Picture: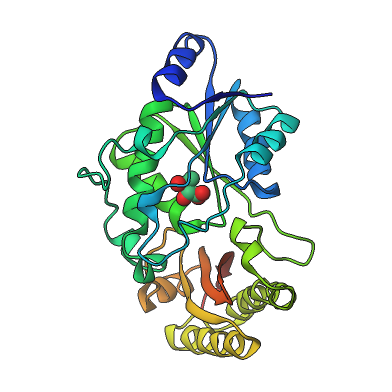
Length: 298
Ligand code: PAF
């Protein structure tokens, strides 16, 4: 069973002598752990001697009217799952332990990368993620930290945070874990009704279809926009309320004719990512799909 710490000071006292000899990996979570989280832990194990999992439903990353109050809190079940896969420490602090003053007057803002995509409908979300992750990094001082690629924008923001604030931490992105029918695992999937759960996997199916269409299409902005619009319309017909469906470079910069044209003038390939956020009933589902546009010389 992992040792559970609720306080920063005791966790730090415990980790201090250990870090002389052993490497530490952090898996930050908001709890309600599923198979996707357990994969993050397995990856952490491969990278470090000691695995710390933090469980903290972070109030600053929820907007007004979002599901902070109803977000599932299942600490006992989470600890049982972590015991079964061998985690060393769980850090489960209270809100006041993390935030002596709430909202915290000190901000960690990520700029343009955070105002697009999810940042459009959740304008304060990534500021909350930024401050809590910065605090967890400072508290635990891990050698590596593992984040899921399902939250693609979050992962990109964390990599930027580590670069810009010079954290000596390796950030490891873990592949998306899916149910057998393709639905990306998420704690929020439990908000789906039985009927919605049947529909939900078509989000990934549509992403895969769009990816194959983009790979075959002429790499032109107009052509791409039309394929994206068709997919969005189709998703809406299926029953999704699409928040966004966008294609970006893998670094989350905008696609432009320059990107696409410069690519088509040589044999280089370009990695792109399709990102979607869509509501289905009470659940807001996120997914993404990487693709490589290969172009032939003209
Ligand atoms: O991805 C999450 O669960 C959260 O955003 C994180 C990284 C644990 C910060 O609260």
